[in-house]
Length: 407
Image (cartoon, rainbow, N blue to C red; front, side, top):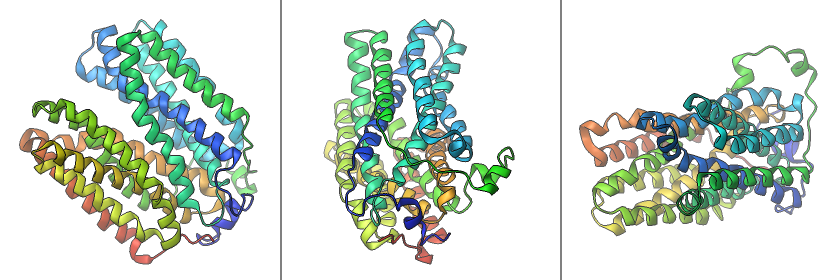
């Protein structure tokens, strides 16, 4: 099946007009709950590990990031076996594990056990997010793929705004048990939403059945999506760079109060751009959104390198938030348009694996220049990397004009 026919093949059961169907809305709720668990605990876990186990800063950071390791491992496998397990069954099992892990945290008395539970919970998140994204593609009407993926991505935007707030307020004014109880409740909310969803299952092809227990690289990663996934990895590196290093940079500039406003503006910019960027993509094609979004993200990072006044940082937040908010769902739509119906789970897994890799490794890879050039120089290097992403996108996809036209 060609990339031009995938829209008919994977979304033929969806309504030709209505996007916000009952099942689409429930999928959105599932992702909000799952993302809230992820973001809330990412914001709290390093501090919890420091206080509970008296570990050093590096170990505390790993207590937070080890979650991403579990998610990445899950994404490598779930793409191949999702349709063998069953999409709804996989979601229910993953969310059960997700909730149980949150309930177990208060009973952990050893750092090593904490890391094991973090990896297990990350596995649940990897299965959940990949499966929901795969199921949602079947719900999106013809010709509205990028728009539908953009609206679903708002779940992450809401979680990024609410999760850290919940972590801070509950830990300061209640206790760690309240933080973990809140995340368990979010996982249960996602579980209940899944029970009411009508998820389109797909029977594996005879070829897939014959190769069920053969684990090849192509079973884990979609080679047609991989070039575009590298661009997504670059974009998520820019996002991770800001999330990791902006706060200490602004604290050093005695602008700590501006930092909280920065992240709010970033989230609002992501929210605003996702209300229309998907429609632009669906109507005018891939090249109408992706290059401009990467340039916007590059400009945001570049402005951070030269910012001297609070309003400079807020403009950088708006540019970066718009760029990141538009480029991630658009690149996912581009990737889906390059594959075939039966490969959508693997393609989705490849996309999210690239995002996880960028978030986990990007700050480490670019952080090494911090000692030599300081925060401004590091953000400037990050801006140049985003511009390289524009060139890579044009080389691997944009110049061929393989646009996603589904309607």
